[in-house]
Length: 316
Image (cartoon, rainbow, N blue to C red):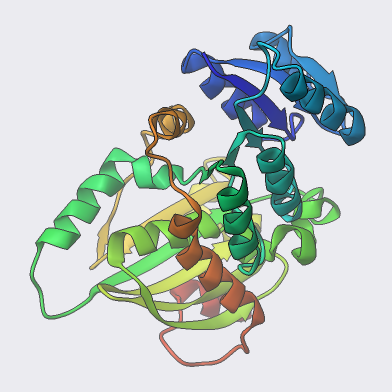
């Protein structure tokens, strides 16, 4: 049984980490969040210590380590806002624990090398949650793509609309310096998935980039991809919106819909199982997607590459 600490216990994704820690037969011994809406802990680990001040959390973790307590932390799970991942990863490594961090691992790619250096100094390891790489349908498609021999690249349209209320732009998620913007906060796991399936990025252009929408064109070794991301409800196709759905996800590959809506419920648990078995996705596994989204945030908008069909609709 391993001991876990959790940073960001009040966040949206934290309950999935608590459930994964419990499902893998481990225990949460300490948690931290400046916000105290963390009653969900009672459903998993009611005996865990909880702190709203980082200094006290730090002191508690350090005391457990120095006293070689049976509750000394083996892993720190990080679910804090994106811009704090780097700092919290450094804290966890220097506190003597391995790290499991939500995506994106960092907002700025240059932080990856600094974290890798601290890994080497401490002998500890950073693993990230890239759960789409563990989805059975995606694994099967990747195998098919790698096995086939063809002279042309796949033609792919990626559309992801996950509508958010007015709160979104008032939170850290609506601040690009904190979240990395919609491209990093909403899109990074899809860009990683595309890299996982179709190889390295060869070309990247951005056609639309705002607080709530972004679109562009990516060319991989084995695919040409038109992509569109949005948190605007009006971008959900009308026929779907009329059913009450607020999210629309579509991946067309060579004109055929790639279906992977199911199979998500246990992917955090699967991620934990792989990490605990020494097969987690480390820093180098994250580089391609993080470099890609960083470039998308900083590049000039241009007309190169093919526009996603939704671009014309929102520009009209």
